[in-house]
Image 1: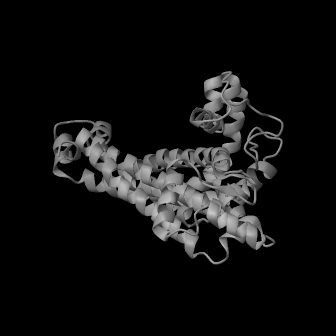
Image 2: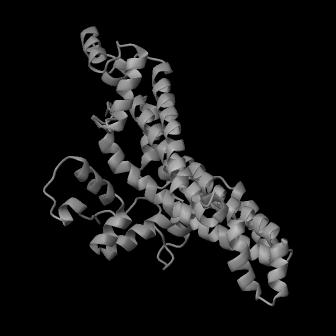
Image 3: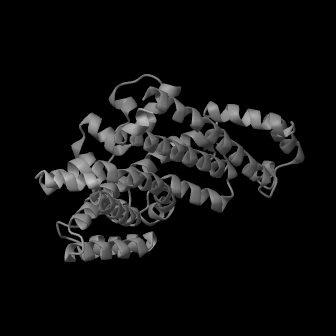
Length: 358
């Protein structure tokens, strides 16, 4: 098992280097003057010369790539001219918002999708099967932005002044705040890696409220998270449901399943103890790949529901031609995707003994 994990970690290194090379190349081939894109169109030639020398843009391209890799390894993503702040600080604020929304949508889509697929396969060709797959086809065909607007209209307007009302925008109720973990735990540090990690965790509102016991803020965050997570999870949930049904039906037709039934085992034991583990292998792959669509859908979802996450940050940066942010967001999203794929590979080893024992 240790050997398998080491191999997967080693295989991820060239991928990360390739991602760095692609983001570095994109920044160099984009049109426009990098100096005036960062300092403004009114920047003088003297300022541009100083800017080019400061960031090594007058050096050979190989040297520039080495400087870029060193900066990325130390968390130096540059400075945003639109916000006038280091990009790392923006990442610490915005990335937890997107991660919280994406993980909520991924969890919701995985649980509901697998359950729907198992129920549909167990009741094959029944009205439940037909209805479940019909809903899956409808779900996969609905655009995220349209579904988000419809959910906001129904739960925020039509169900106003009812127990089913849900907030249509924002991450929390206006005026309701929570102290950072630095303040809650009386940490004296004001900078450094430890401080940055604590601030990152503080911006994960569910985690922050849970560890500090602020349950009012915790439930308020969940209420504001339901609608965007529901809108974002619909498409991957439908795909996971269809894949689970197809994979489970294939496994249920195997000889060892017929043998288990011939021995008198109950259907529940046959399905959940013997069939599900093998049926989950392709489903895990689909769940991992769903992260890409969830991160892409976060741009629209965060805009519709007014979430100040990475999607909104990327959208605003593209409009302002702030290539430093665009480059950094691309890199971070790619790294997150690589990490998720690594987790999927490790999950394979857990589900399939042939992998971890090879």
